[in-house]
Length: 298
Image 1: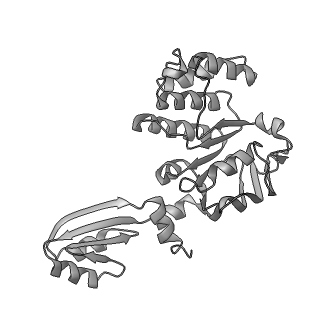
Image 2: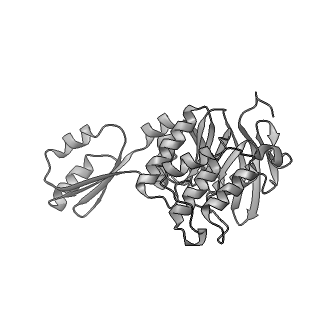
Image 3: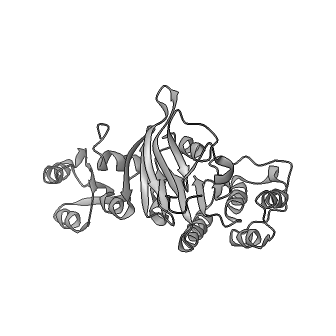
C-alpha cells in the first residue's frame, strides 16, 4: 500500500451497460482523512462506481485505485483497508444479527468485539433476533455496525441512512463526524443533499453516469437556493410582484421563485403587497442541478 497515494483515485472510469446506463469517463480523487460525498439522483451511477472501487466488476476503460492499489487486480489487499456498507443490504435470513456480526468479526480478524458492542448500544440495536424478522431499519443498523466495527482506514458508504428513522439518521451523522475527527477517509454516496452537506468536505456530483462537477461543500451551500411559493390576495398583485422580480413565475394568484443568499430583500419587496400565504423550502437535488448547472444543457 502506497501511503503517499490518494485514498481513492479514479481516472477515466467507464462501465457501459448500453442504453445510456453505466458510468462514463469518471475522474476524481479522495484525499486521505477527507469526508467526500458522492451525490446524485437514484440511477445516476453511484453504486456502479462503488462496485468498481470494490473490485466487484471490472471497468471497460479507465482505472480505480485505493492507496495506490488497483481496485480489481488487488481487491483482496484493498478490502483489508475498507469498511463497506452496501446500498441494498442482503443478510442471511436464517441467522441472528449477533451471529452474523460475530461471523463478520471473524472474517475481519477481530479478536475484540468491544467496538461492535459499543456501536450496538449507540444505535439501540438488539441483534439477538433472527434477521428474517428484522425491519429494514434494524437490518441497516446491522450493516452499519459491520462496516464500522473494525475501525477501517477507508469507509465506503452507499445510501447509509436508508430505512433509518430521523433520530438514528442523526446518530449516524454523529458517528461519521467522529470517524472523520479520527482521521478516517470516508466516501459517502447519497441522493440526499442534506446528508452530504452535514458530513462532507467536498462532493462529486454525478448525473446520468457522468461527472457534473467536484465542489467544495461551502461553495455548494452558498449556491444552493431556496424555493419560495407566495400566494397573493388577487391576480393583479401577483402579476405586479412577478413583473418586478426577475426569474419568478406566476400562475393565478401564486408566484414561485428560487432565491439564493439572504431572504431580506424578498421580504422587503413583499411588504407592500397583500400576501395570503408564504412557504419556503430548500431546493431538491434535481432543482439544484437545474439551477446551478444551467438546466439540461449544463
